[in-house]
Length: 389
Image (cartoon, rainbow, N blue to C red; front, side, top):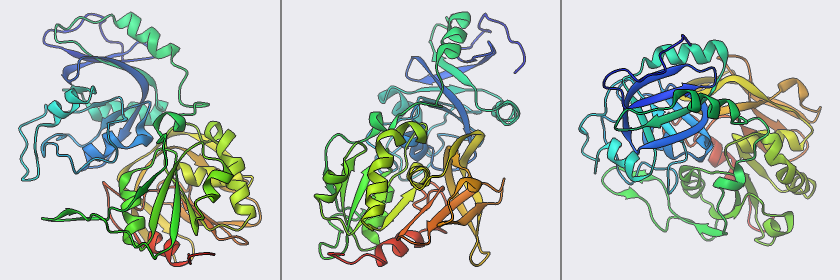
């Protein structure tokens, strides 16, 4: 980024200060304060509430490339967790009054109520280009109504932040208690289906590394009943629920760090032949469990328009993605094969084992936000389960 003055320009009430000392000025909204994390970008045109409440964004500041963020307001249905996990957001245009029949309030008021910072009036395209060229930087987003900022001090905080590599965040975002889930998918005019789980259907135990609620709804819609357990659940604790299959959820942070306690559990589940389905971080953890390697990506994949090619029939799915780490395809053992490949950069987007009932995808088939091309994966998983197997 280009050098910018340390003193706030007239009218500036917010700033994003990067580790290199660059100061990107704008108009603050939402909560006042400051937050330090990794700055990434998301290309989705819709679903900003889902993005902000996705636990996979813990430790990150989201730069939205779509300029009109907040124009459909906020509502209690479009959330993927109880609270937002993204630290803040950067947008081009000021947040307007909502123009949507489902809105129950303004997006900026929702951010303020949830203690999250917004920064408007930014050239988000320029920031996106900088991230593409230089990679995702550390930064501090700050909002002060008086326009008073210590830019030098904020830059020092950005430099001192250790970054996501080597950081285990799953413990911080995971549930602390085991619980049952039985809600189903959303329908216009009716909302989310309640008590929709099939008690006689297969029992799926979902390990929560930072899961999104719509994943659970899709498992229920596919015919399962679901028990959610914490990220740190042991093999014995998982098996005590007598699962027919085990789901490995999405989540934030470095998979290698989370893998210190998650990988031994997954390996034990594989050894006893439990069917496994993983998404995002769950995909990366499965890759590590079978002997593969993961690495930090230059800019990551975040958006709702990512094309993925299926290796078996060549068909293309448009998918929703949110990840900054990836499984290295050439590190997979002989008993694993690639099932999906990103058409953006050729990175591994899915794998399955040839000798065990386990598969995973790097993207988000539950969408929210995003297309529903990949909903079939939930049915594929649940259909292979039988109670008592």
